[in-house]
Image 1 (tube, rainbow, N blue to C red):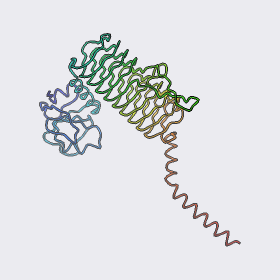
Image 2: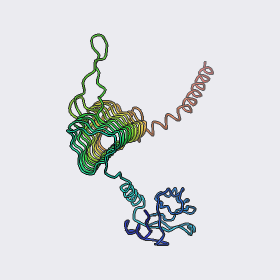
Image 3: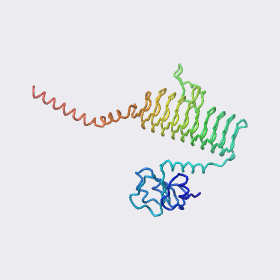
Image 4: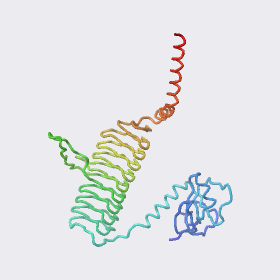
Length: 348
């Protein structure tokens, strides 16, 4: 499908600078632009590429002023926020690529399951007993939906994802390939012989609306009750959420984060990659945790922490500067000791 610069400007409430009739049919990064491509420039670090790009249209901020001549084939669409506007176009493009409603063969829907309108069910997908599937849901090939699962309207479950029994998935969620929702929490207790006895995990997982789960991420079911990811939570690939964890609204975690059982993570929290949280702790609202931090205890609202064990970022940076200077400090200390020994010998 093709769009003209004039049409794009109309969608984004922008201003065309150049040829309003030039058309694009694909999207591209500005440094990889080709004729017929639409790109955007929001970060000044990439400004150099706008002077050499082969893209036909580029979305820029209203404040953009060219420092040199632009390519003759390039038309600009000036908007209030280039990044947000390009994201809006990406969302529209993504909507256009949605699967058409159909049930591919072979696939299986249990006779007790309730299925809404507009379902896409890929080949070899499975829907178990007493499931309730909303309208306009996509369940891609080889996905497995266990018994008693509820899936809300507009949710997408990609290939190879598994949703275990009794889990509840809200509206407009995205569960990427290989993700596992509702596997047993890591619950074992040693018996009198020192052997680990499995503790049955009889709870479930609840994902509220607009939750995104990355590829190969796992969210364990609760021992009792529910593991809960609240509205708008976003998990990257390869994240581990333990049993009975609660994740607040609009909280985001980067890849390889591990959250141990029964943690309570607040709203609007940002957690960097490879962060680990010990069990049963509480993280307040609007907290930021830097990548590779290890968190052994509670964190208060609005804190920014880093390090392992993690503590307040300003103090950590001061401590790290001292650590980097440690070889020099030790060298100076040795020289002072040598001078002191020398003076002691002279006096004796």
